[in-house]
Amino acid sequence: MTPAIQVERLTKRYGRLTAVSNLTLEVAAGDIVGFLGPNGAGKTTTIRALMGFLRPTAGSARVLGSALASSARLKRRVGYLPGDFRADGGMTADQLFSWFAELRGMRDRQRTAELSERLGLDRSRAFVQLSKGNRQKVGLVQAFMHDPDVLILDEPTTGLDPLVQREFLAITREAAARGAAVLFSSHVLPEVARIADRVGIINQGRLV
Image (tube, rainbow, N blue to C red; front, side, top):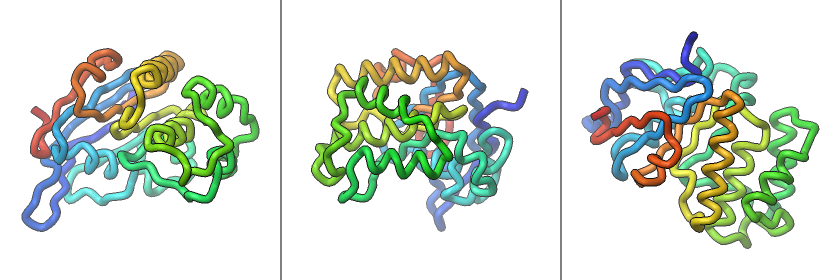
């Protein structure tokens, strides 16, 4: 079977700077792969290439067999959390979730309410009024709310307190148990060790 996430000989250069070099990485359905490395190692560049935000200099980055940039339908099957999640500051969390639900063609909002409760998120407050940790919770809920086939999470526990981190890890395990492929970037080894089936370590753009 084709892996749900497939990075093959990916290279991304910015002028003389090589951010990612000849990287090959795969994540099968039902697997959680931790993507470790120091800040600036190339994790976010790889993830942005997978999401179709960057065009590779060489190689390929595919999700569910295709380049995400070419398919709006496939994007609905992916849950994505960027490293610096941002949203319209004047909208409440509930309004933001309604907007994401419309984009994804969702009708049932029960999952959104369940995830918000598990993470301890007040959906009635405007995004701009939320602390960093609560903004991160909004990002996590929107990534998981449609039970996607693929989850691509860039530093997902940033700003979360330990109890919420533990609940996030439980939610992630549940997603993998139902068959989702999870790529989970971090620079915190113990966090990844608690959840990952496999770990890839990247440094200076290369898988080491």
